[in-house]
Length: 283
Image (cartoon, rainbow, N blue to C red; front, side, top):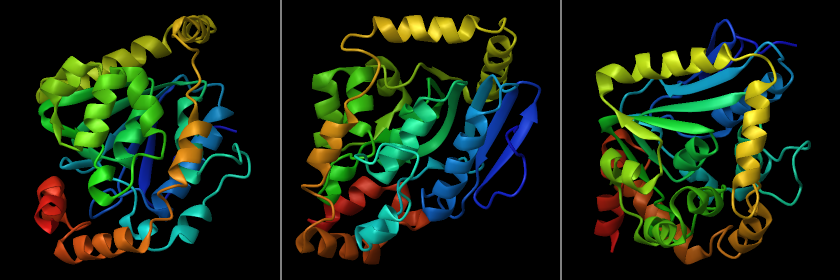
């Protein structure tokens, strides 16, 4: 069954031969909520069985937010998040880990084409892609969870450490600052920063070049590269999941802090443009 191009609520799918483009379109902030998560799970399920599909590019319809973060309301209602549990995924992982692993393990090559802000679950989703290219000067990254009283639990501790190393991963996670494309590129968080006016063409050419490689070559190359990674290719998400239950569902003091943050503007467009500053002003 081929990947469908219709019937989605919070994203769009277009197809150009063996390349599919998934455009995240979930106003007002491209928050990873129940609707978008359900659409992404559907995309991953259908793509896995689509042998005619070679490359998946993920982009955003919103130039200010690639994927803001996971829905803040899941802090108040953990059951709503847990209802997204994937019966085909590892039952020891939480639903966000399951979703991100669906994308990380797809047989297609996945490319995240980044513009705008991506924090927390948004950054984790981008890190589940095989490659990340960002518009220089127009893209910002953060693992902001410790400002909220938790830590990255959707794969962030594992994906980020594999990309940037332990010391820088701890800096990103515990410092919880916003990183521009220059520093993200230096750290290895992204493949490269590309001039904004060149990003679309660059990614399109790369995607179609990969799609034109003879059948079996890409899969073999990916397998060989994965085998070269120190410690193996599979992140230890079980350890992250076991650690994350210590902070989520969150204690009442953290829930109260998030309620004050929501009242101050979290998950509104104005508040999200300076999310780090908003949390700092909460004290």
